[in-house]
Amino acid sequence: MPGLAECQSLLRLLIARGDPKAIPLAKGAIDQYLNTAPVSARGRGLRLLQRDALDQYGVAVGVQRSFAETVDAYIERKLAEE
Image (tube, rainbow, N blue to C red):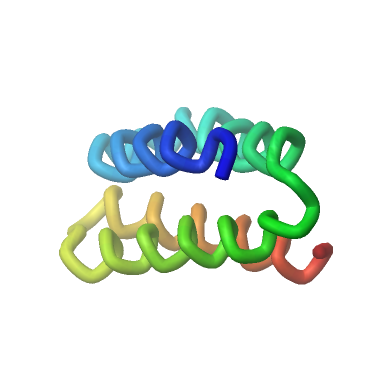
């Protein structure tokens, strides 16, 4: 899927850092993925990104955990729009 690996890598890095100031960057990466992915692949890609964020949530602590929750919630909203 176009852009999915790049988006996933960036989200992993941002979650690991847990900097709340980077939330717009995470949302932008997700939006960019959606803008470039074929319509038929968007939902599947979002679910993969969400699963990855939830996996990181499971091993994260503190701000990383909060960042992963924020990413998950944003992806959930995007899935509802699809």
